[in-house]
Length: 99
Image 1 (tube, rainbow, N blue to C red):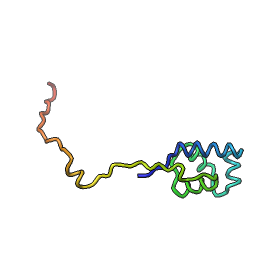
Image 2 (cartoon, rainbow, N blue to C red):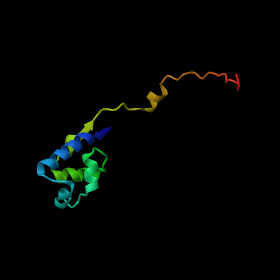
Image 3 (spheres, rainbow, N blue to C red):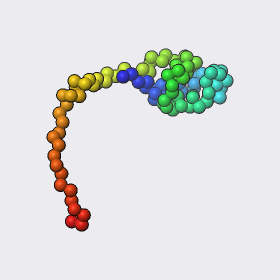
Image 4 (spheres, helix red, strand yellow):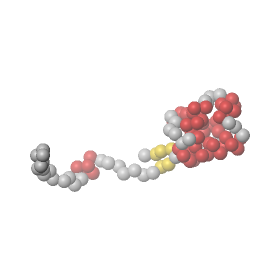
């Protein structure tokens, strides 16, 4: 399953804003489709919707694929689940109160 490396993206966006000399306010003025809260979330490595992530990348001139993490995940199939070892059930003794 693919993920966005949000911290890496946040650092790159912060660096880009610094390079341009933009505060959040100036960035919103220059890129009216964005807002301060969205920029703050992005710069702090918080999750954005896919559409907002792409929008921020476009406005800031960042390649969105640069932050795409393609880690191979273990795929669970019905066969792999059925073949898992299961611990046999055992009866347990309950302690009586006061002992």
